[in-house]
Each structure stands twice: as structure tokens, then as C-alpha cells.
Image (cartoon, rainbow, N blue to C red; front, top):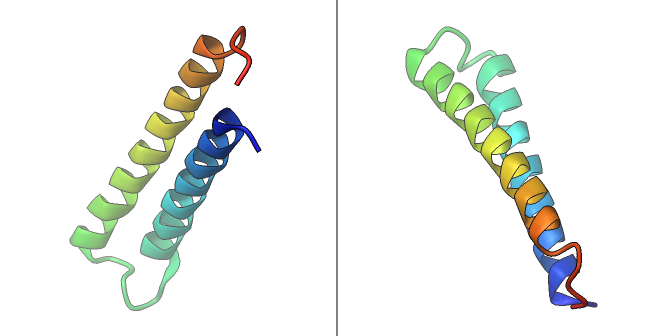
Length: 67
């Protein structure tokens, strides 16, 4: 298993965790309407978008490398 592949798996896991947390913040009955959870949900969506952008940048930079 290459370092590049492990890096991709870890980034994908981070994206998944951020989106699951955002889903929790927006849908859990005990947190709906709480401004703190709304901000946290929006922040985690922003983090997921940032991780997707980083993943694309990483893939572009390592496309020609053999790792």
C-alpha cells in the first residue's frame, strides 16, 4: 500500500466524518434550532469542501509521481 493511497484514504475519512457531523448538527432533534450547532454544521461543511479541494490539489500534484 503506497503512501499516496494511505493519504487519499485519510482525507476521504476526514471528509466523511465532517459530513456525518454536519448531518448530526442539522437533523438531531436535541440540536435543531440551536445556533451553536448550526454554526458547527456550517463549519464542518466548509471543512469538507476544503478537504475536497485539498484532495484535488494533492492528486494533481502527485499525478506524475510513482509512490
